[in-house]
Length: 340
Image (cartoon, rainbow, N blue to C red; front, side, top):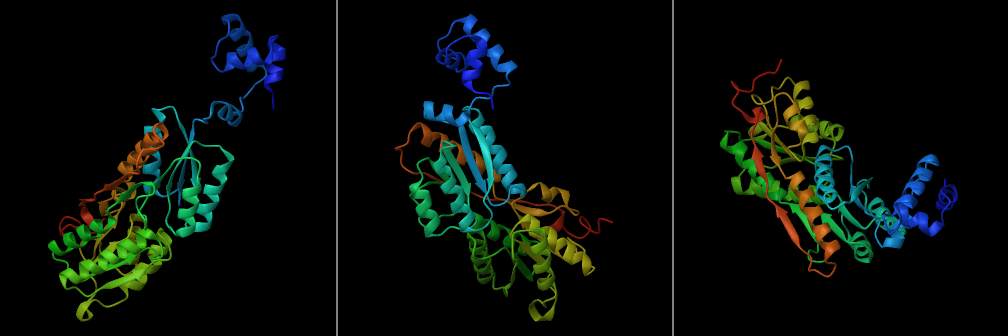
């Protein structure tokens, strides 16, 4: 790797002059011209970490998510990048997986000083993770429900209200035997959505039909949906509707229904959660609860920028309320029908 010393030697100036020229500091136009030409000829790439240590800032922020391929996290990432980009920051994306151990590993790696701040959206939160967050030397914003709010800037969706919206919508459309395919209930979203479905069943007087998928993925959703659809509903009748904990699981419900000759929107209504791009791509299109992924990303980025400007400000919490986006998967049979 070419060094600043080599650039200075090629340009015929001192190392200090070369450094000033490359960093936009005080230097004559002729010196800047010579140094920039030498840097191009030698393909010199500045050491971002060294520059950051000198300036006390790296110009980089980290965003840690469970799955970089999930549509929801992609929407959040785009919103974070767009918001912090206006302040001159770059975003480094890290997939932290679904375990506390991988989440903690990311936090500990930040001690190396590569970023100025962090937005993290953990699936699982325990005391170990909270302790690591508290020890960070850079500002952090947590996206998701925290067991002990108040210590960190926090943005979360009201997913419990989202589950209630889904169930209420299905009841209004005449569905009576509603099942739920949840994600792992030892995760924060799984626990909250499972409790919300139980509450909705209790309020409406429905029997509770629920299965738990091994993950918030299509494959896990398919396996769980097969189990759910093979169970009888109230009075032995089949289920006429399913709420899925996210849109990927809902796609699994679609496939399990097709295997059993069930028509989505006619024989079986389906509601997903997240209203990701996938919802409009499925056939019939999927009714889904919009949990405001882009809004959560934007709010998180704004809180992080505010914390960088004012480190001593009180921690703030933002709750993004859900909305229901109705599509063909819960429409009357003459509107939905068989896409084939």
